[in-house]
Image (tube, rainbow, N blue to C red):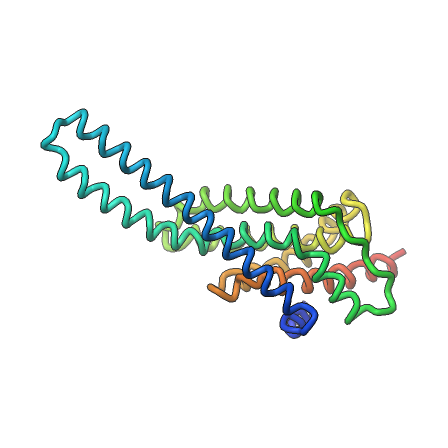
Length: 239
């Protein structure tokens, strides 16, 4: 497993993957900025609407307190958006990976497995669907884990473990579906759930590193290509 991770890290900055690296970083930043702007606009609107409602209910004398409260909420929300952008990186990278997974996998297979039959690229709609489902699950888990952040970081641990499961599942299936139907890919993942989860923990650790985590697909996809190749050979020997 660690050998697979080292191979993935060594190949991240290879000349053929460098262009994919910059494109994936650019798309991830664009998604984060778009989400941040949308959340900021929503919060500004809610604060404004709430302030007007308070003034209407309590009268003009409530204008100053309502304005001060609105500023405090806006500042807290701004900090929340910054923290939230870090927590939402698993969702962002899940979407980004769906666009570049096959390009990355093809290069890993070409370099490390030149004598094996090459995988078949997934239809873009299927890759985006898988990435979208993972992103929505990540957001749902983030929302559920947020209240537990107040309890000695229990929420952070919960989120980390859930991220390992989510991203491990997505990247493994993206790698496996290049060689087998989706149903068979999911069955293989379930059969080797512990191994896939172990690799997912490495991905979760990578995505937890600020700035570096923008390159998550360039680490996670090669890692899971190696893991899938190893498990596929075990399966072939078992037969």
